[in-house]
Image 1: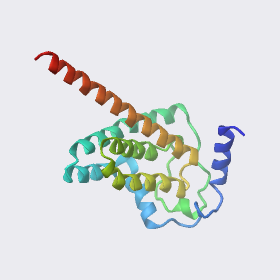
Image 2 (image 1 turned 90 degrees about the vertical axis):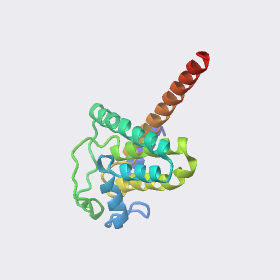
Image 3 (image 1 turned 180 degrees about the vertical axis):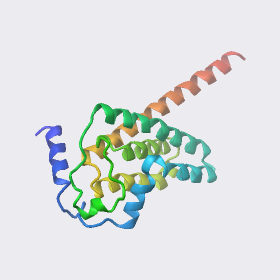
Image 4 (image 1 turned 30 degrees about the vertical axis):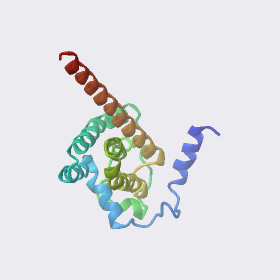
Length: 186
């Protein structure tokens, strides 16, 4: 069985009632995570909290990663259009007031969350202990409410992680060049 076949099976199984993804209405915290993360809004106050706790550089890098990742996620969704799960009659799906019609792949919530979380982890592992559960909660909320297929969320997490890693590499490379130029002028 190929990876594509396994993802298709995982996606198909996600519409069934299970212990991990029950069909009943999700806990209000799960609903709140999904709603507050819409448009990346959740990550602004989280960045603010990071900055208030003396982690300004981490906050700036994480929020920048989320801001860069979001339009990339939207661009990918335009190129790789995919229909959302047909779960409108499921109580879990009815929990959200939004009924998005945009492409399901990738989950833009997951793209933004993963970018923010990965950038946080790269810059401050201690802060990542606080941020990572939020990232995972947002990703789970998109599955739990049946707005996305599991492969949409996994793909979104991968895209967000790659964006954060790329920005981190670009940033570190730029600082290395700036430092080298500054020391060569002495």
